[in-house]
Every structure is written in C-alpha cells, then in structure tokens.
Amino acid sequence: MIAQLNATHALADRLFFASGPNKMPVVRIRNSHASAEIHLHGAHLTDYQRQGEKPVLWMSREAYFEASKPIRGGVPICWPWFGMPKESGERPQHGFVRNRQWSVERTRDTEEGTEITFSIGSTPDSIALWPHRFKLTYQLTIGRSLKMELSFQNTGDKPAEVGAALHTYFAVSDAAEIRVTGLDHRQYLDQLDGLSTKVQVGDVTIAEEVDRIYIDTEDECVIHDPAWNRRLRVAKEGSRSTVVWNPWIEKSKRMPDFPDDGYHGMVCIETTNAAGDTRLIQPGDTHRLMQSVTPEPA
Ligand code: BG6
Picture (cartoon, rainbow, N blue to C red):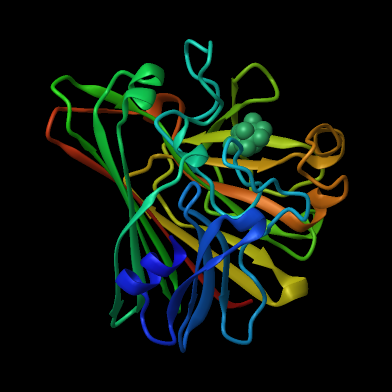
C-alpha cells in the first residue's frame, strides 16, 4: 500500500508516504516553509511546524494508533455530528470519519506550499450509522500558514443535517498563561453547566476545566502565548460556532489516552458547526468548512 501511494502521489523530496505507529500509513511533508504529518486514519493531521519554529499542534504521548479509535491530539475531523448524537445507540461521539481510513485523491505544489487532498464516501456501514450518501473531501495546504478545507457534498436524494469540527489541539507553553482574543462579549453554551447560556467578558483565560460552544462567532481568534513569544491566528469560513476546550485536572485523569499532566500544554480552539450552527444541506449541494492557522511572533 505504501509503495503504491508513493508511486501515485509522492512529490520528489517534499511529500512521501511511510509506515507510521502500528504500521498505520502516514504522509510526511517537508518544504521550504514547514513540515507536517498526516495519518490516513481519520485524515488526521498530527504535526504542523514551520521551519525552525515550535510545533503548532499538541499531540498526546499516550494517543492510540488503532483502526477503531480516534487519535488524541492534532486535528481530529468530527463529522457528521459534533459531540454526542441525538440518538446515541451505536453512534460514536463526534461522528465516525475520525475512525475511518481516508483515500488520497491528489497531491501538488502550489504557490502557498504543498497541498494534499483526502476523500471518503458513504458505505453500507456508514449508512447504518447515518442514513445519507455523501462525499467528503479534505484539502490541506502546508505552507507559511496551515490551511484546511473540509467539503461535504450531499450525493443523496434527501436533505442532510450535518455538524462538524476541525477539533484543533494547539500546543501552548502553559494553558494557564495564555489568552485567547476574539470572543469578548460573545455568548457561549457552557457544556459543564447543562448548556446554560453565558456571556464572555474579556479575553478567554484558562484556570479550570473549560468546555464551551461560543455561538455567532465568525471572526478570527488569536491565541497569545507570551512565554513562547508566539501568536496563533485562527481564521475560518463556513462556521458560526467556536468550541474552546481544556480538560484540566480531573478530566485529564479520566481519559486513558491523555497524560494526567497533558492539560498544561494544550488548548483546543475548534472551528465548528455545533449546537444551532448545524447545516441542512440539500441534495447535490456542498458545504465548506475552512480554517487557517498562522503563527507569528508575539
Ligand atoms: C470537545 C468537547 O470538543 O471534545 C468535549 O467539547 C470533549 O466535551 C472533547 O470532551 C474530547 O472529545 P473526545 O471524544 O475526543 O474525547
């Protein structure tokens, strides 16, 4: 499989496929701007780092690399629902595409960097979980900025309601020392308080477990990390909701694939279609969810 992928899609010294943890296939990219690693399992980005700079993404050192489980850290793609589905049963939290192997559609060099496009479509197994036909493509551009574009095409014959998240785990010097701007005065649903509606006052800081869905948020968020002399600008399109999550002490201990002290080094700022921001997509129509991340000095 790796040889076949390289024969079809490798790009000289910039992009190649390899066997990753537990022999799961990964693609590694390195160009003059940045390097990256993506697992075909979940089309899951596990590393993005500009040349000579610190990693942008946090990865759990206790992550599972197994076909039936999501990878903890990086950017899981949550789709076609965010969180727990309305009817649970066999349906997993955050949808099923983070637990499936994706295909590689295309790789190419662009003016911005190296681009790779993954895809996944409906199968009898997916229709048993979610009764819609679909084609999902995910285009990543690895350059001075990291660009992600998730496109859902409704290939079925009835409208489909979708939720989604580009569930981005950002690496930070210390979660307790950062600030997130761009959410001041916005309302959020507090997932730790029965989804009650609250209002953000000032910058978001983290001194306890945080699990919030900010609503009516289309603007850029910025993670200010003075100890690392870094700002991460997170911009988006196709999303009017933003999730901020840090599990803090007790929840970190409850997650088997998350180090007990891992909460210090990460914060999730998620570009989502969550809560009232799910989208009803008509047959033949496409919905695009886009996120870009640009590091800059503080
Ligand atoms: C966040 C949710 O998006 O994802 C949290 O708001 C959840 O409630 C977290 O705990 C991690 O989810 P999972 O399924 O990857 O453990």
